[in-house]
Length: 252
Image (cartoon, rainbow, N blue to C red; front, side, top):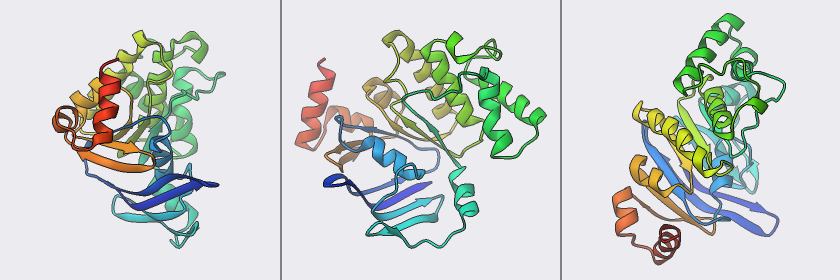
């Protein structure tokens, strides 16, 4: 579903991504873990063009979307075709980024109407269905300010799902939440995983990675140092850096 080959990205002299290669198969859940500044979020953002890569290739569903050398993308593709391919990728951020003047229902309807160009009636039905799916069928008319952080993040997940993506990217979706609200968001993500959604998740929630991931990827200093199933990653990591990181996060 996603394949990256030797992806590199720098901000000035800072090399944030160094030859990152990864394959995400259909219906696979991959959790990316690692210390702050490892390049995890930048990698995720590069997959749907929120960050422009300097080097490397990005394939979405076997379609080559980006092929960059020296910051120049050699893929000849119309903006419409590329947008179409990127519509298959939904993204949920740390911050909920909901429109404060719109209700939960209106926030979720917005993109299907304006981007997918479906009718308002169809968008309303779809929005009600996905809000029900994330456990918010009683909050359709609520504005973001009337919702807890966990509820706002669930609206943000519903908003991404309303575009009917084939792949979901989650960038530390619980890091802005109070501890008691984390569980409700993780349980929605678990149910998506059980439903067969392909997911790439940057997370600090080691319990979630252990329970839900098919594979766990450890990033450090812009590189992937280790990839393994959770039982291997958490019990028998091969890399010394991975060991140190897990020791520090699992003992706190």
